[in-house]
Image (cartoon, rainbow, N blue to C red):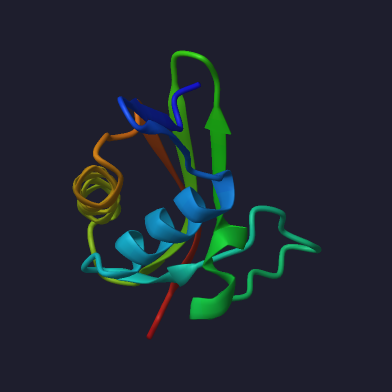
Length: 117
């Protein structure tokens, strides 16, 4: 599995929830991001998630060969959406590599909302 680190002393298993929180915290530090939003929208209403619920705006898929992260975000009105998304992807790659020792294979960004902050 991609989320298991093995060495001579044993192995470390990193749960999907931990990866989701790390990715969500990294994304929140990106310029132009208003916040994380839930994966599922109900009745077209999008609410921003607080710091304690960031994992609900991140979907982590782990297979034998791949670690795929999908982030659901709201961007600030007036910013270039592609730049915000690129900043989020770069920040998540950097932070996960720093904290876990490896980067995700793919980081997908889904822009659910544009907000005036």
